[in-house]
Length: 250
Image 1 (cartoon, rainbow, N blue to C red):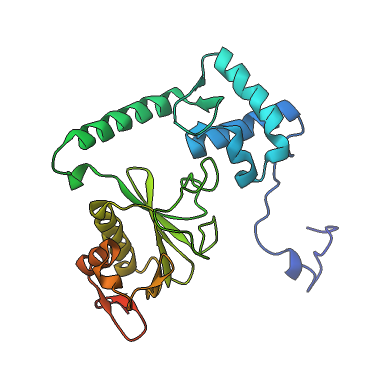
Image 2 (cartoon, rainbow, N blue to C red):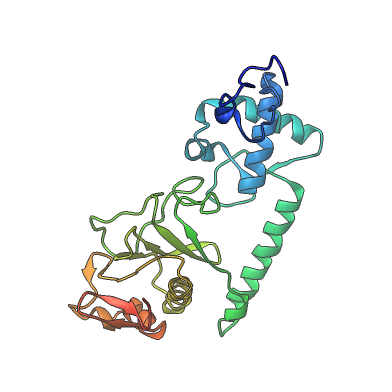
């Protein structure tokens, strides 16, 4: 209208479009700590101080802890030792605790079966940086069965992990050329490589040409005769001049 800045001819180009006034940033520290606690509980399910560095909130966890303690007193959050090796002072929402107990009973039933039931196994592929991946954040990276090599896992962009029943089975480094194994159970490796193959077929990982596994060349030194080599072959990875690639993959 008349008198508005930029209302003249040629003056409104930079201000074109829809504008929305955002609410003012919350300045009350308790409210901010409460919001952060709710966000972290929702993201991790079970919350401990160990996740703070991975979330970039190491300097803000003290007020979050006080909020969690108050929520526990109010019966909105439970405190306990829900996950082994996760450390003390674990906080979780009641629904998360019930789910953990149900999953634990499921895993116990699977372990008691003489023949593994694939339909009951939880096989998940995640970005190494995904908050749902506990390794390198709430949990340390597990030691590998073989002697250590120069390749070590990390929460690195482009890397992926495959978890079987919550345990780390495979770590694929960025670029899809090097894989690390964290299980000696051939059945677990078969489940993990099958999930990896599904992700490659779906185009979720880009080009994957496996060259090295646990520091050894896959195409030399009997790599195809290892538990991982057999699992990859069953998942339809085949030798090429450059490494193992999924048959039919682009």
